[in-house]
Image 1 (cartoon, one colour):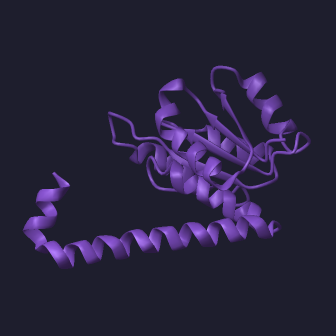
Image 2 (cartoon, rainbow, N blue to C red; image 1 turned 45 degrees about the vertical axis):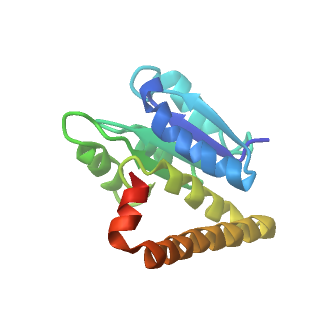
Length: 171
């Protein structure tokens, strides 16, 4: 049964939101993915948000660009955590999306990650679920160790090759 609902207003958001899916896959968290528009299909959107908790969804990750109402409307209708992912837009670079998501009125919080930060949204959702799931905490600890080891390896490579050699190998 899915514990995380991943929503986006358009299929054009899928390449970004796939990063949340990838992180949830890494941690073994079940999720569902929906293209759902608060503007173009308000009745279907309202039904989804109002029934998500009953269906076992514990966290919603909602990606949106432009006016970016999807995460805030989810938070208004769904009492469990909502994570907003501002999607970069061609006209304003995603700042419009970021402001629309992060500037929620008091009482309707949306945890907000960076523009196009869907990978962090997947990690944050996992951390929220890990509050009551020790096995997820263990998987998160392993992930942190993997990240640390990756940086240590890069630093050791830089020590061996020097700046110019390292840059040449990057290209």
